[in-house]
Length: 329
Image (tube, rainbow, N blue to C red; front, side, top):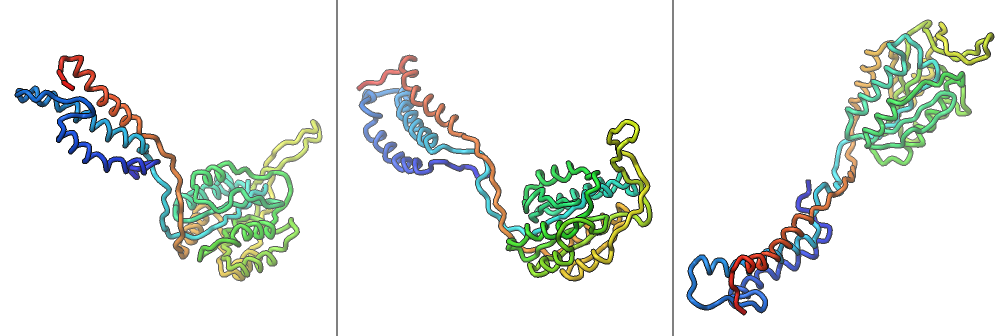
């Protein structure tokens, strides 16, 4: 916490006059036009006559502090941290709802991604989701809470619109192309075969390679068949219903491995939740690079106690007069 912090610190220059005022009051034995009696006085009487001068001087100091507007909170803070820039491209096509993982592939992938994001506070991380097309859910950010909420809210696309791996890779590369970080990484998580989109995956990989991006590809899903929820029209009612259908699941390992090889990354196959966690743990050991992070936190005004104290001290001589303290001109 940056305390004290002042919104208008130039007012504090008036405090330079405080020593002169104290000397002047001591010499003249008064504050303003009021003068204390020069008759021999008891110690208690002298103390009471000096009290108004002290109170006014203290009121002056407190009023100046209030005018400078002390604030409670944290200032703009610029700190150097070790991190890399990462764009996660996560498949949300209908096959990611397959139940060969518990409760399904996407839910496990979301949990692992959220843990990965939470464990890298020094990195900027973005999120791209894709099925038949790609969508940037978040550009590179250090806002962990916002990113966690975005990942937690993801749902699979149950309409049969395909898996556009090339488009997803190009989208993620576009988010990293202007990054100044030494290490720039795409983590591509998919469970399928490229069967949609107008961009060839290997062409997108070539672009990533040219931009100096490392692509880590992760193939999710068990071998063979799995129960997958799909939307079908009921021939009797005409309504769209979601049913679990046994389907053959296939991951294009050859394509994903080639994308990783061309960009200097790595391909891993995750056939269960533990394997997916191990893959992300391996990625977590990537090289880190210094970067600047700026944080913004609001201030809370703290001048009120000083203003009220100054008012109370300024009114003190009047209260003393009402109490019977005699002050002569």
